[in-house]
Image 1: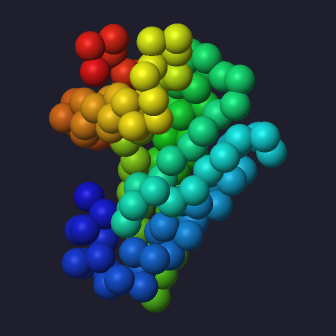
Image 2: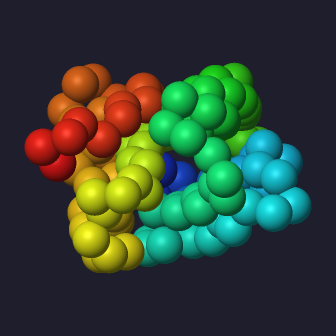
Length: 125
């Protein structure tokens, strides 16, 4: 959990974890995609002209890359994982708010499933 990194290593270490995570995100997305920090330790990525399966593939590549990283900070080696939720904008998506809620539900399921995984939005999300 991100809070545990802040508690154990300090907020500057947490900031470094966020920085290297952002760097990995930048490396994995295309120039046409949009990525940014969405909340305290949350990121959002909009993949242009990408279906759910392709988005899940990219999310899994990102998850594996982050899982393999070690952040060195102040003489400590910090390992961490990420959970990712994937939601596709379809013909039945009412608006961006619904789309974000669907992605958030998928993220919640990823965390409930033991973390360090990718979950796709279900139709009932």
